[in-house]
Image 1 (cartoon, rainbow, N blue to C red):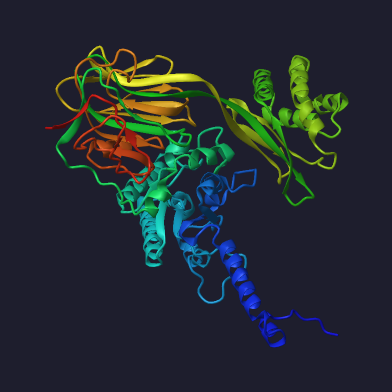
Image 2 (tube, helix red, strand yellow):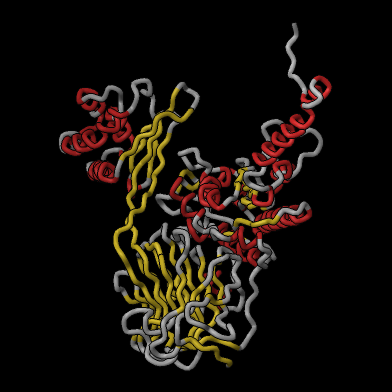
Length: 589
């Protein structure tokens, strides 16, 4: 007898009294299905639409890089993050994936079919082909093609009632100063559009347009640490602000400002989510000595390690991963320098030595055999070989016996990673942060000039005197590269090496830090960013442009009144606010 699923529609014909039960069951079933589908409403669905960095390449945990980290951050708030990215895409090749024409191609991640309410557009000038052009004319053509393509995605998104957010262009290891200049120029252009944007470059830029060392997976992609720095540039409450219809911020044109009287408590802002790269900009007028803006939080120590992955089965698949910690990397670096001093070929000798050290099973006999070709310096380098072998022995012991064919990796000269052996495995230099203590840094007047006092007490003075004029002071901190830049009136006053995780920003008044400015402090246009600013972006701000990428706080400080404990106007597309203390008054110029 043929078995079939019995339809609810038949019940009332067989059992008339079951009509009510049938209807109730149908309603319950429909409600349950609807509730399951809308556990996260479509109105809270975000799609990442980009290329390989957006898809998570470089994240060896397989958790989709910055997209996966954004998902982990926003899911507890009731948001859904889908990753509709594809490696290698440019604006031209991504365009057909926006909406399928005809039958959808199998295994293709389209945007419109997943029905998002928001889309983060994550493409790059690198994939667009800027590096492939050798003439200014060619590079300008790629620049125009990219901006036209991104604008097209913005317009198509809005036409389909999707709110667009544009991720700014980011680093690439093979960029020269030429491509870096085009990247900065594109980011300034994106900033001028009426669309929210994210300043990825300010998280991973080494200062020349390349990935910061220790945050790079390969020439084109960040590693896990790099993805982590990138996601921190996304304002956590951006999507709530967009959901509530908060508009793109506009620079204040009012003549009003805030005055903090002597002894007044500061304006304060404490980020709700951890912050790494940051920038804070403020227009200020003060003549007394002492700080007017302070940042407190934790200093960070960075530890580097090599993640070595094995190739298996001749297909280049990732195998088990092992870690070589910093002390072992130092031993291998020492081995390199000693080889160089002995006149030997670093690459040849190290390859033989490390292959022996990582052979399975590894043995002293294998080490000695591999070292026979070291030549005249062999005896002198015996202690170095022993040190390197001991350092790598634990790594070899942790690998499965089947994984005998490895891409052997170690820290090379200058700490960079070199790989040897068969393709398919690899080594990625990773960076981990740990809190190493509390800090307070400050901007203020010292010896009559505007200065920055770093976390370790180092003073970076400017040449701008504290006088009756307004001055714009900006601190821009790159956590990944461990550097803070200090600008006054658009000019770089100096830089200092430090690595910070800010937790509280305080502005004005006697409690900003010990020995705060005596007398009134006038303040306007306070901006706090979740990304560092480069010199071009600082120059734009100095020229009167409101740079809005990764902006979490924009307080014109022109509120009609400032009541203690009450929040201050914040025009940035976020849901966070400054809080006022006593002693702050509204003023007109």
